[in-house]
Length: 299
Image (tube, rainbow, N blue to C red; front, side):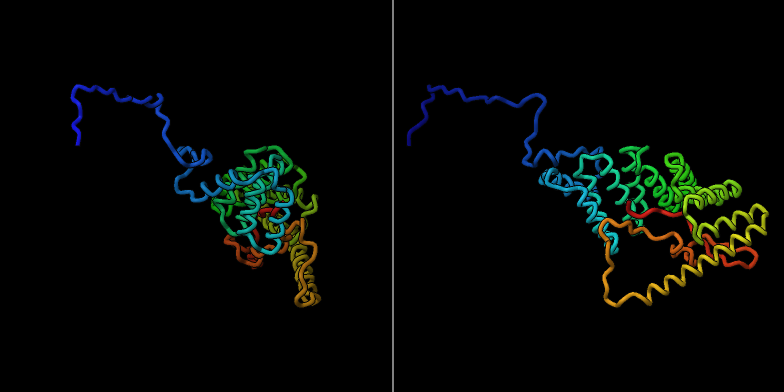
């Protein structure tokens, strides 16, 4: 074994050092460089969504066709799948109008699952894109409905009024505004809103019953009785029509024409009208069944 020569001097390299500021080494792709101040660290979907965007070519996604797929999921009551589909529509399209439509539809699917906080978030995302577009009135109306369901009645009225300002030809918006005004005891204004909704084609037993209650609060008992009788007649006709449709439907037959069809229920068939709504309170022995505000289904 040879001994190291003590007289031999060797200068070791000190290296290049680190840049200032220091850039850390990370094997993760840059898509996962998430600002923790902007993303909730407990949101388990963040990484999945980031990887989805990183690994999917947006040009290869037909967002309009994907929207139709989501509508078909809604038509067969597959709301969880519809939520994911509408999310991808908003994620992969460069068209703001289509993205907004995706968010509104996502909110409607959440509403079907009674996931009100998520529905509210989706409608707010839609409005953040454009608060004065063709879909903004639907987003505001649905947001008002979701807020009411979550117990935020005061903000619900605010957004129902905003919906009417955006589109004064939207019957559902007028009905919701009337309902919230009636809740606050502003019966005369509520009746005017109900009349506007009826003139725009939204004539069903539910809106007539709400109008009758508002008229009673105004002391116009005779008009209230007439409107209530008309509401009951419409209800009976609707029930008879439903019975005839059920009797005439062949067993095992699949419904046709689902693709692209608006699957939202008719307000007159709202199950809350049959007594499930927590807002009861019949008067003068009349049936205390009542409906609530409405939320539109997917666009």
